[in-house]
Image (cartoon, rainbow, N blue to C red; front, side):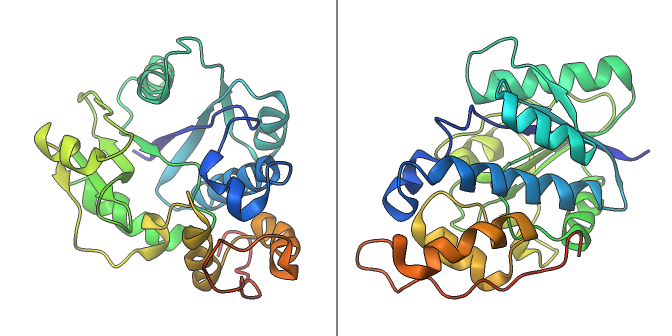
Length: 230
C-alpha cells in the first residue's frame, strides 16, 4: 500500500521567518510558497506515494497546492505544528484506515522523488521511523506504518525527541535532498547547490541578483535547476 504524506504549511505571512535576512520580508512568503510547491510536486512524483495531504489555512497556498493534486486539510486544531500533523494523519486514516503515514517538511525545494522513495522503503521496515535534517538536529520526515500512530515531536532538536520516542532513525540511503530543509540563507545556498525545483528556481534570480545574501556569506550562486519531478 502506498504512503500517504502529510505536509504542514503555516500561513505564508508567517512562514520561514528566519529567511527574512536573506530574502527580505516582502519576498520571503513567495519563497515559502515556492518551497512547498516544489516539495509537493516531487512527493507526488514518488513511486511509493499514494497521496499528499497539506495541512494549511493559507488560501493562496491551498489553491496552488490543490492544483498540483494535493488534498487540502484545514488546520482545525490551530495549536501548532505537531497538532496539525496529528490532525492531518487522522484525516488521512479516516479515509484510508490501513495507510502508512509520513509527515514531511514543506521546505524541501531540492527534493528528488527517487531519494524519497529510498527513504520511505527503509522506513517501511520499522513501525515508526524518521530522517534527521542535514544538521542532525531536526527532522524532515517521520513515518508510521499501518496500525501505528505518528506521534510527531517536530520543532527544534526533534531528532533527539524522536529517538527518545522509540522511532528508528534512518541512516542507510544516501538522500541529501530529503534532508535539506531550508530555514536560513546558508540552507538556501546548500539547496541551490543541490539543484532546486522549478518553482524555487523561478524565484531565485532575484536573490542571485544581489537583492539579499546572508550577512557574511557568499553571494548566492545561480541555481542548479532540476526538472519537475526529477
